[in-house]
Amino acid sequence: MRRQTLDTTQVVDCAARLVDTEGFEALTLTRVAAELGVRQPALYRHVDGYDALVRALGLRGREIIAGRLADAAVGLAGDDAVRAMGTAWRGVVRDHPGQYAATDRYPCAGDPELEAAVERVVHVLAQALAAYDLGDDEKVHVARSLRSAFHGFAHLESGDGHPHPLDLDDTFDHLLDLICAGIHALRSATV
Image (tube, rainbow, N blue to C red; front, side, top):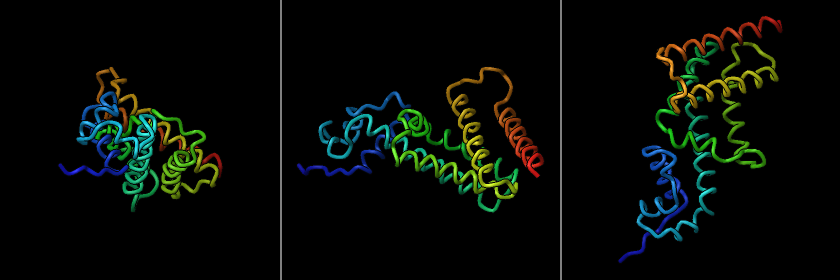
């Protein structure tokens, strides 16, 4: 019988498929090992344990977010860019629910790689705000606000946190209207 060789990417890929198809609660090292056809101790050559695997999934989730936001904003400016990025954020949660959930499961503070991943997301959001003619500091504040609003909505939406019968797409459009109006008001106040 030929021995199966693994690498870290295969382990994280397997965990990502598992959490995206069955939910974050399905993630265990035992389950990942079974999916890969190895015994659990074989995983420790590639991840230092459950927390390290969760961290890797959270890092990957943030990379997916940054990539999707950047792709969504290409060729767009102002309100159109904000709306496209908000829609892209919701798309990440829909397409990668487990990896997205992992972004909240491991603390970023004090972890330079995770902090840099968060900053990449904020940077992509800030770059798309160029048409609003905001100062550099203000762009960062607005980008952080966008991240908070998009994450908050997506988090509630993915967890059935919007029990009211109104259409969620309409509610999200209202959120985008409020955000864009707020950015315009902020810009007017600083001119």
